[in-house]
Length: 270
Image (cartoon, rainbow, N blue to C red; front, side):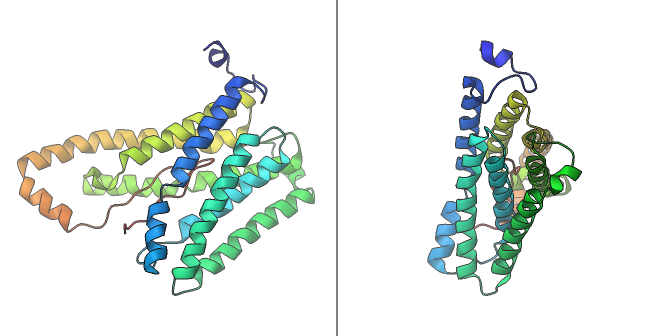
């Protein structure tokens, strides 16, 4: 507890037991979230049909994990983020392979090639020294800062998915479409990586994960507000509510996309 109470910005070395503990706890949580769509993809592979699922979140996640892997490789003492996202990249790539095999179109393959090309382009710019023109957000090296900035920017931009769910909850005045368990998992993961980033003084990791913390809290507030309203409507008109839910759109699952987090599950379920 004494070590945790002493955590400040960049106050601990990467070899600190506190940093190591938070890094691996964050990794384990992230791997659990990365694995969450696995059952769905087993069904897709077995049926040979992608049905209404969208490949784009998984392709973007490949790019996201790939950038974090590059960042971990060129930034000293970032073993946990490196291993976390290496595993994530393999899983997300496997999901994309299922899409490519089972989809009747070539869109997933085209977008996957584009995503991998973007990773290669950022890495090439970093090697060529373009990091000199960007602010320092990661390690001391310009290349590390460039890759870290790209990874943080993409990671933060991907938070639009949970915001779409929040908007749907507000419009429908029902929390039916908000998976609270997934939001809690995302919050725990982002909070763990936030502490890790503060301890080692890494702005690239800190920025997307603090955004994840804030977004998760917004989801909790919206859930609390509209869960009460949902319960009140159910008590007044249980038959009407049951009929409405049975004919509504499929459940939307979404969670913050963080360092080591999976893409939001699709807007349909198998």
